[in-house]
Structures are given as C-alpha cells and as structure tokens.
Length: 115
Image 1 (cartoon, rainbow, N blue to C red):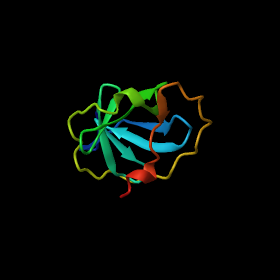
Image 2 (cartoon, rainbow, N blue to C red):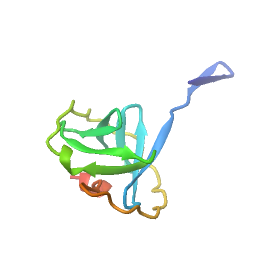
Image 3 (cartoon, rainbow, N blue to C red):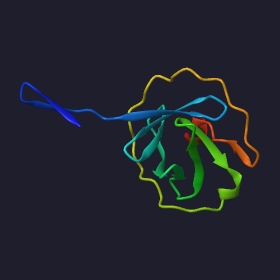
C-alpha cells in the first residue's frame, strides 16, 4: 500500500504488535518476520507458527496477538529466519496474562534473544 503526495511516494508498512501469553510486550511483525521491540528479527512466520533463526519451532500466535509455545512441537523444524535488523520502538505497556493451556508454555521473553 502506498500514497502519493507531491510526486513523492510513501509506503505504509503494516505492523502487528505482539505480547507473550503472560502479557509481556514482545515486539512486532513486519512482512513475515517477528522482531523484538529493539528491532532484532528472531523468527519468521509460517502460517501462525514462528520458526527461529536456526529453523527450530519457537511458538505460535493465539488470540490474534499473543505468543505461546506448544511443547509438543519443540522438535519441528522450518525454514530459518533471515538476519535482519528492523526499527527499535518504545516498548508498549504489558497486558494482563492469560491462564496457561495444558501442554503449553509462555513464549520466550524478548531479552532472551539479545545474545
């Protein structure tokens, strides 16, 4: 999507923001990559599932904007994520967490990907 103003073209980038299942603000999705709020691409989307830089399953999206990890999918592998740097954004406020589903665990905190 773009709009033209005075012969300059500006592209509007749609971003969806995500929180972990327990309510910690994580970051955003741009195109097919999941970025931490500091702008580090930590994974890519394959449908609703997220695969890390090394191709291993990290988790999935539930309830439109919450990240959660299904323990039964730990051995899944997908395409590896690109090494991209996105824009850093001010951290959004945390939300109240949801009760954890049996067989699931919270998505890793964004700081765990800073290494």
